Image 1 (tube, rainbow, N blue to C red):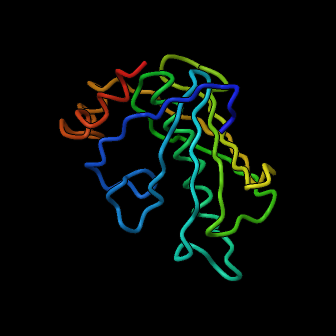
Image 2: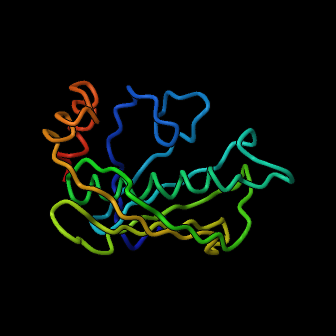
Length: 166
């Protein structure tokens, strides 16, 4: 973590089963998130059971990490429920299991009150850029996400600390 920039840990209720961020999903990545007001970061190591040959992290797992950091960036920084509409990924360098990684997300553009563009960057322990992504995310109020059946009352209660955090 860059010592020049103050990051604070974001709340995560853990009472959900998200593969990317749930601390209680035994097969998941258990991503934690930290914010500095302009970006969101996560530090993790991908478990070996999510690797392919020669301990390479599967591209789908890398995609999940980038999607997760971009989504959390939009949720926290814009205080909206998000849905990924599309994302592009460039795989630049191999990523290996059981190695320290840093994933960073930032809002690139607020297209409208219903859509934003977010970037995701994945760095290895040498701070080399290994993958990058851009995603377009739908932005929804909690009420609309409930009405559309995307989130129920329990899920929304679990996100309240994140949506209300400053």
